[in-house]
Length: 454
Image 1 (cartoon, one colour):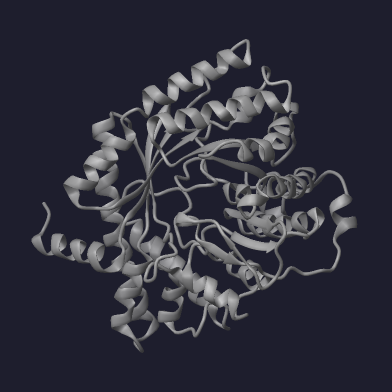
Image 2 (cartoon, rainbow, N blue to C red):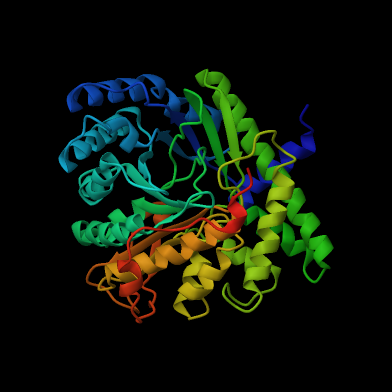
């Protein structure tokens, strides 16, 4: 039974501290959408998505009104399309045709994004995998609501360096094809290591093959709430700071749990997981960068940043995991540069560099996220950045990711503007020394010794 004080406290978090449920994401299996022609597959996919998710947006809006809890996005994740299209897709254009069908279905049901235009290639690529990956630039340039991801590594398999090399080229091509919108296509494309099957957040969401036929996953937010809470314990010990973050994360997660259970019941779809991630927006007061500053840093990127972020991430998980029986996805703190005003400020003043961000990704939820770099950056350099980040994930047995945007026609000191939740980003400098010969090697980096736990 809800206590009136909890209701008042939750209302205050919503009204004053930007608390929201960032996304309700319905995961839908498309495994049974096989067919003998591309057209047949497309028809089955469209029918499946529009039938299963036809009421998703309405239910989200109804819950939002009835509970007074903002639900920012309603999204869909699907089975990786390289698996669905295998055998029937013979060309890049065949996969693009499926992608356009997905986009049409997304528009029909009214969701913000569909995630799962994806390939899982951490150990090797099938012909279908490679075709899908090569189709990504054209697919993203010709659609509106599609997000794409490619899993190139894991702790168990190592890093597929052939795929890493290819992704550098694909990202450059996606940037070129969307250069009129500050290379926006790259903002909807992420490269992953150790990707979870149940992530509700874009652009890395896909419906893993281990999942049920359909599920509801909810991603909470709330960096503004955490910042407000720790502002009341300024100068206190680390023990007090940690307890404050844990208690706040518990309250935030309970809100997500309530929304997830309601959505599951009304849609008659099983509840999957709550993702605990602190997901910032460009709005003032809704920033992980501000949380780090409230902990005691002048800017994100200052000495002590990695330690502060590690503390924050751990306490969010400890508090949130007590509030829900099913926690999954990424769960922690996101550090996307373009989507967080104080991270933008830190990058612009030089406090935050790509190298420091890389260090921070060792202890947070994802990785190098929404980072704009000069448009003339070489594909091999991008592949090197990806390889570094994948290595962190592989060795540390955690999810890491790269969502990097070479903004064609722009250089260091300029800005890329993406709009909405994607925000804007300063163009950050990239190390100019070459890794060409390293990236040119074929094959894969073996799994680390601690991967053998069978």
